[in-house]
Image (cartoon, rainbow, N blue to C red; front, side, top):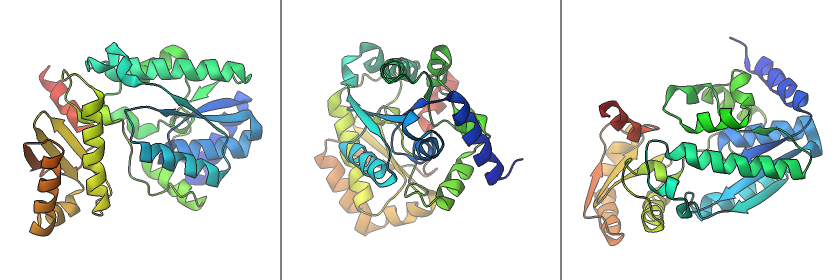
Length: 271
């Protein structure tokens, strides 16, 4: 297995060979590293595009822009109402495919306008372990994944980000708010806003990596396993229950398995 320095060199080589590209930028650990190395390697021939929509809290968009400014990245922000897409709001198991295909098509169009003919996402090798229909959209449109091609795992991404002094090196993993909703439950702005507010409440209480899984009247909270005891303590449990009920949840539960990326995909095994 190549070490971090070798993977970094491989990444720079892959990016240089494109001659210029558009980075699908979210401000998360993966895309921030990719965007930073692309800027180092390609200079003005790299461009970041950030999607602002109901599927991400505004606070995340603001933070992504602040990170880009600190790193000297060139960013274009596009705003779309994702809930206007019926294929997306129907929330079938192909939800991510429809979303990514629409997003990547926009990025390819923006790239052509700037004479940049490659679009890159921040997927790494670990992303192959989960159900990701968005990957099919990227393959159909020719979107490249330089981090994955260079052999980066999530741990590698964090290690190199730390070596490069990127502020995102320990940033909790991001995911679209729709990933908190069971397949088959129609998505609307009100649900996305409720989930976003619920997760923000937990973050304000010092819980870093959180997910609030939305099951109608039930909120199923996931935090890291070492944080379960703290959340279950009366001083947090009672406060969180009260605030979640104000948001409209009738029942508030704590998942004893703790945080797990893509946990809603467990239901796919029964389909």
